[in-house]
Length: 265
Image (cartoon, rainbow, N blue to C red; front, side, top):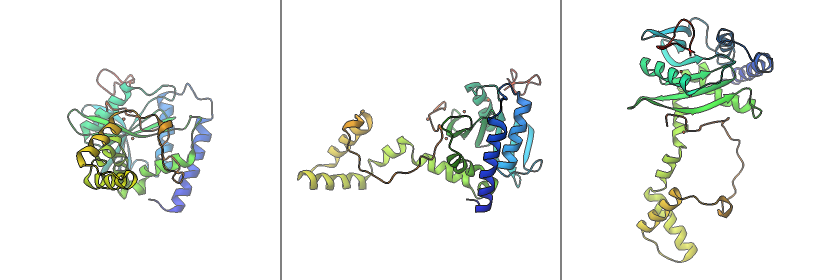
């Protein structure tokens, strides 16, 4: 998605970010200090230009989103920042999603400088969201190579080439409900009938296969009793990832200036 030179530079920036911020004792850092971290994240790691492509305190219906990231006048995603010392919450999520929904922006990043949660906003009734992935720099399981691969989708050059469309397509393609639906497709049913006929020398009708598939999908099967073919191991491409967190299973704060109705925490 991006050149090897920029990819290498991004990886070095990720290492530098973790070294300078995450490994230091800054647990009481407030939101203004955390924004300095996010400035570095957006510029040094993701490659966006200050001022021109990173808009701060962006007004949305009388309140202000922390950042809007754009290129060529196209708004790609918003960023809602909370203090490093705070844990991200559903309240913070709701705030970020409301900003995106009101402005027609499809992607939102909620972060406290340690955790980076990337959400796809779903413009349906009611508005909902999907946590597509999360990178937790402070996690004991942090893997910088996986973080690098995931964050590349939000790198400036990749975003310009529609990487976010590709990311969403990959996410939705592997959702359980989508895969479950594919199992009922005619060619899968036909394949299973042939396999069962060859193995058991017995003919099965389509409705019998569909009924059995329904049991497979809807009923729990003990994994220890399941014979799964061995495949070549692959690296899991997610970090502390995709748990249904919408208020559906890819996460809105306050200051004395009242960035949101009712105050911003």
